[in-house]
Each structure stands twice: as C-alpha cells, then as structure tokens.
Length: 188
Image 1 (cartoon, rainbow, N blue to C red):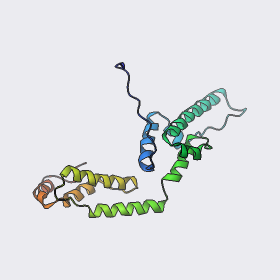
Image 2: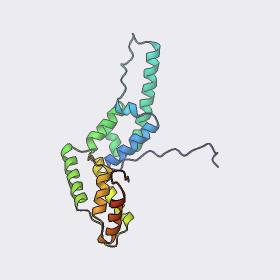
Image 3: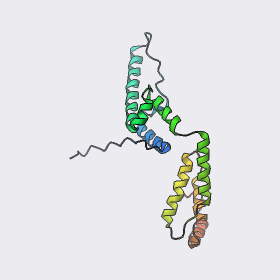
Image 4: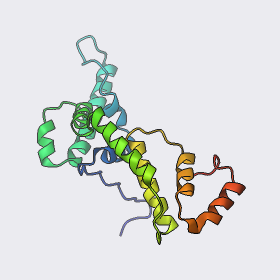
C-alpha cells in the first residue's frame, strides 16, 4: 500500500503521430521536470577547455546530465522506428528540433489545415436533437484546433458563433443571454 506522502508520477506522453498535441503535452511534462530550457535553448555553455574554472566545469557537467535525462524522456516518448532516425542527435534540443521539422508540417500545409478548419467553423450549426453540451463540445474542439494552428481567436468570437448558430428552439435563451450579459465578459 502506498504511503500518504507518495504521489503518482505523470506518464510520459507517447508520440502517436499527432505532433501538435503531443508537443504540447511533452513540453508541459518537460517543464514539470525542469528540463524544458535545455530543450528550448540547448546547452549554451562552451565546452570546458583548459581555461575554464572548476565551477564552470561543474555547471557544464550538471547541464549535460540534465540534457541526458531530457533525451531519455524523449527517447521513451517515441517508437523505435522514429528513435532510429534521431539516434545521431547529440542533445535534447537537436532531437526536439528534428522531430518538429519532420512532423509539424510546412507553413503551406498548416495554412491549408487552418483554412479547412475556418470553413468548418463558419458552417457549423447546432443539429436538431443535439444537446447544448454536445454542440459546445463540437464548437470548442474546432476552435481549439484552429488555435493550435495559430489562429488568434478570442472567447467572445466563439460565444457569438454558438449563440447565433443554435437551433430556433433556443431563440428565447439566446435573446435572454444577449440582453442580460455583456458578451465580452463571458468566458468559456
């Protein structure tokens, strides 16, 4: 039985082919372990030469150990077939940059994906028989996908979209919300 002071270690996010989602989870995981700076910036200290002080050498050794730990987490997050393509990368930053370049997609692809999501958002309407919670969920899913692709979208835009695209069954509720609330202060 676990003691009261123990806690569950978070699982390392596994890369499942959806880079944007995985990279957010992995960044958060590495931040929680205090390794994200190494992934984002890399080891910036110059390799210790004969003119380096003992303190500088110790700091560099500590950074190399932390980088090794960050690399280990990245190795555990990816499948063997992907791992074999990055084995020659020396640092966690090199691995991260390589995965980002390979899986995030080009700017053209991202623009095309964003255009498709914008169209899906524009034509989105509540279906007859659909619950309000289900419709909220569908709308927020599309809006969040747009945001991960770089779309700047305030909550008020999403709220207005939801209110104007609900079925006529909810017209009285929509009217009441619009009359009694400032939509700019509502949040999702």
